Length: 102
Image 1 (cartoon, rainbow, N blue to C red):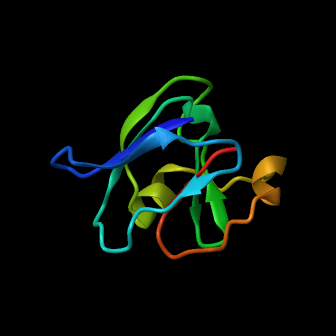
Image 2 (cartoon, rainbow, N blue to C red):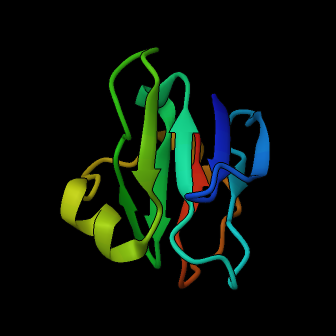
């Protein structure tokens, strides 16, 4: 899935296509980054040990999703059945939001 992580002033801090099982974590000092994701039905957010999402459905894109932990937890449900490829990926629990793709 293609993702762009950016700030409210539109400064891009990360942009690329994430491969299957790959993840990205915004820098800890970045406050409330936003994400624009293509193929959003394959983009999830990890908060600590919980996986939430997907950010959208199918191949549609979503944009201006705030990657603040509280905003993600309020907007997306925790995934009950984790996609197998994500459960196999080495991805340590972190405090901030982490984006993952199956």
